[in-house]
Amino acid sequence: MTFKLNKIHKAVNWNKEDDNFTQAFWEQNVKQFWLPEEISVSKDLKNWNELSDKEKELYKKVLAGLTLLDTKQGNNGIPSMMSLTENLQRKAVLSFMGTMEEIHAKSYSSIFTTLLSNGEIDELFEWIESEKTLQRKAELILEAYENVSDKKSLYLSMITSVFLESFLFYSGFFYPLFLAGQGKMVASGEIISLILRDESLHGKYIGLLAQEIHSTFNENEKKELSDRMYIIFNNLMENEIEYTNLIYKDSNLEAEVINFLQYNANRALENVGFEKYYKVEAINPIVLNGLSIETKTHDFFSTKGNGYQKGIYEELEDEDFII
Image (cartoon, rainbow, N blue to C red; front, side, top):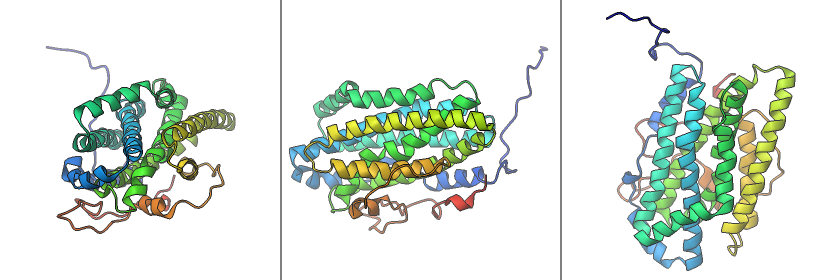
């Protein structure tokens, strides 16, 4: 049989570095690989039963909101970036990150299965579909993810992804970190810590790719994209504040969570090469300590902390890479 080739099909070659950072991110992602089944959430049952109904409701809803975000990131965000990314090593790293987003989404269900009845779980997922600010958040994200057709839209998709991973998640991360820092729901808090460690890596990598694309635009294009970026940024933050005020109502934590969001929004902007946007107050030290992705010490046989890994973990810093 004879046929005419339409193009040359290439295989990924890991024996040659395509840039000065992608292979390092691949190695770090692999070292950080984990599964929710490796953490015994059942150890939290005693704490769970001691929480008030309002505390339980808040805990359930922050995790439910995170589940939706990870679902959209794994199903829509990462594929949108891969669609116009030609470099095969970069595609591989993005693909691995997409897999981890799916594992993150599944990890919340592992917590739900341990702590909640089937009826409560069904009600929670119905709430996800009915909560307007949560649905609006998904719509704002998907506006960027579902319209990737050229380099400009790819850049905006990457920017939106960094915003999601580097600050939108943090309204949900706050409460588990807040409780775990007080010795409550520690096993579930370890899952959040592991997810947070992954998201930090994802935000840095995709931020580097976005900065690289940004450098190829002329000054008029950069101004146009900067304006569009800040529209996305402000729309997301406005909705996130409304969402935070809703789910944290009656917790007396709303102002602290919003400050925490703004702190992480500044970090998100830095990931994509822009200046800080907000002046923030001091972060609750219990929660700020939980942001540390350095190794935590635990009895390996009682709680699998984020010190467990397949290789040596060293946090990647911005100065490790040159754009």
